[in-house]
Every structure is written in C-alpha cells, then in structure tokens.
Length: 492
Image (tube, rainbow, N blue to C red; front, side, top):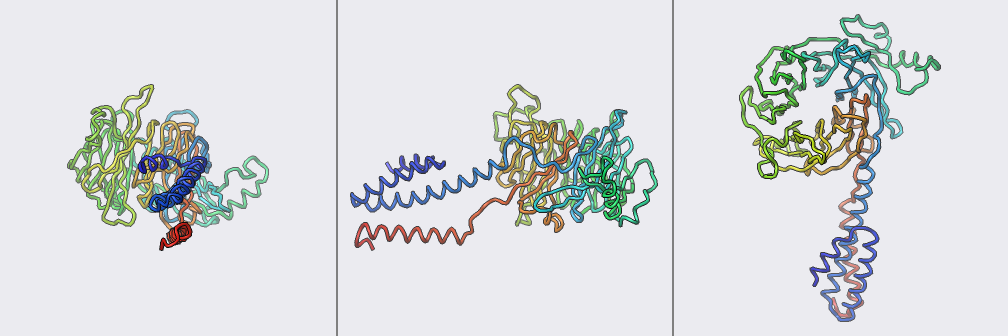
C-alpha cells in the first residue's frame, strides 16, 4: 500500500500537482493521528518534506533549462564580409581570431583573417575589429594557435603566421604587402563614422587603439591530392613542440615546431580526414576519416581501431560514420584522460536517426558512455580547457553545450545560425578570459557560413549552500518531533 502511495507521489513535480499532493498528505496525517498510527504519521511527514524539496529543485531546474534552450538567436558579436570557417581565442591576450573567405573562385568574396577584441562592459559582451589580414586567393578552412603563431590550413598548404600588438603610433604606416594585405584600422561594429558621419571618432580610435601586425613565417605542403587539395585539420600538440595536419589525401603529417622539420607522415585513411587530435603526452594521435574509421596511432603505427557500437546490436556496420574527435582532461583528476567522438548517420532519411556522442577512456580507449545528441547532423565538436563542457554545432545552424561527465544537454539554441556551423571554441581558462566570463559558468563562440560570430553563455547554475541545507533539515527534524510530542503526549 505504501509503495503505491510512494510511486504515485513521486510523479508529481509541477506546482499544481504538489498542491494536490500536500492536501492528500494532510488528510493521511490527520487520519493517522486519529488512529494513533505513529509510524504512518512519521512516514507522511518525512515524505512531505522530500516532495517539497524535489518540487523546488525541479521548478528551479525547469526555469534554468527553459532560459537556455529553445529556438532563438544568440547574441551576435561580429559579422564578417565573407563566410567564416574557423575561430580561435588567444589565451594570453583574449583576442578572437576568425577566418574564412570565398576561396580562389572569382565571386568577389574576399579571403581574410580578422582579429577582434572581446570586451565586457556592464554585463554586456561586445567585439571590436582590431585588424584585417587579407589572404589573397586562399581561404582559411582550419586553424590552430601556439602563442602568437597561427597555423592556418589554406588549400594544399599549412601557412604559419605570427601576430604582434604594437602601439598605435608605431603601426600607423601599413606594412609592405607580400601577397597578402593588412588593414590595421581598428573600428567598432555599428559605430558612427562608418557611413561618413562622425569620422572624427574613427580617427580617434585609430590613434588610441593598439594595432596588430601579421607576418608570414613559413609554410609547409600538407596535402598532395592531385585535384582540389585541401588541408582539413591542423593541430598543435599540448607542449607546442609538434604540428599535425590532415588532408584530403588521407595522410597525417607531423612536423617539429618551430623548425618545421618533418618528423613523419603516414596514410591514416583511404578517404579524406575529417578530424585529428593528439594526447597531452604526445604518445597517441587520433584520426577520423570519411571511411567509417576512427583510429588511434602510436607514432606512425596503428595502435587500435575504435568501435563505439559494440553493445548496440541495432546499429549496423555502415550505418554511422565518425565526424569529430577531441581529447579532454577531467577536472580535479590529473591522471585521468577522456576522448570524445561524435558519430553521424551515413545516409540521410526522411526520418533522420539520432547522432551519438561517445566518451572513451583516454588511455585504454574503451567506451565508457554513449548517448544520442539529437537528430540534427553534427558538424563540429569542441571541448573546454577544463574538460567540463563539450560544444556541438549542426549543419542546420543549431548550437548546444553538453556536460562532459554525463553527456547531458545543458544549453541548446535551435538554428541560431542560418546555415551550417563550421567551428566552435570555448573561452580559455586564463586570467584574461576569466575576467571576460562575467557571471557565466561557461562562454563559447560559434562561427558559420552565414558570416556571423555568435556568443553562447550559460549562467552560473543556482545552488543552495550545504550549511543552509543542513540547517533546514535540522529544523524539519525538530519541528516533526515537537509536533508529534504535542499530538501524542509521552512520545519522547
């Protein structure tokens, strides 16, 4: 009988149902007291407080989830004059670097790399364009940072550039062009003066704002495809001693940095590479190809091929393919490492099957947890520096943030971009970036082919201090004892 009461009451989580629950419990307590049934009376008293706690918790969580999920637009930080394919944040300075373009085709769409300054004023984030670096006929498709050095995947090459900030007066004269143009005039999006009026404000910004200088420091050929060569992914190792690239020819190439001496290369996949990452100790390289394979390499030797659906018999061999991979540490556990992979359907049906995200042991490469992550096809994956959060972008323009530990969705905006999300990056765990977070638990940037750079912020989740919870629990226990003593004299 009590089990039936318990199972029925635990389904009441909304406020209205809780009111009916309270009336019912009051009726049961009254009858129990009249029948001198002390045990049943104590049970309903305890369950009333449990139900109250659950209801309050659910109301708070529902309010929080409703505010961070749905179909709406995220704040737009910046809009470029060309499609954006990649974005990174330099930890030391907090500079946002985003790049893209129209490629070599003569469509009138330029190719470039834009440097933005992120600011937080009065709780509102804004971005200022500090510098524009034109990349001639080469669109930057992927990017990785090593301090003030940028490794950019452009056509068949991985181009390395160094940027530096200078005082405005030192950088007033433009640098000599060497196949790429630099525009150092700082300006603010939406400020007066861009359309002719208020030009004095812009001149003042040019004089007062720090300027950037970008110079090419080298390039390596990272793809040898005979037709349409393309560097698909580039990555610096954690210690910044290695530079890795993956191309459309299926090869992984590894160079020593900063000498750019080729260390080794090998064919990792029969088809083009989708993604690449390297473990913090530089011992393992993980590659994702369009040939349905996700492989772990020790140097240039295959260590293991991953299989995420061993315990999912409903999924056939060629039903899904890997899309992305990322290593991530576990907060407060120095010796623990995780690998995250995203799997998307190989064929698109009218009723699309869900995509999946898998968490792996980063040392043994065994699957720990797999969960569906929606029916929209995933286009990109990012992990926060702390390893606490994962970011997902989709081909339909949606953006989501997941909790890495449980793979639970924390934040979601449907179709916030007009088209495919091409890259994501979290605000780094650096002093400069922490000051820019404001009252947010996590901040992530997204870019897309719609030329927009958007910000996604998750506010600090509400929580009660432990001492306050214990204090109220003590009060409830004392209250129940005093009430039972008044109802049943001699109870104590």
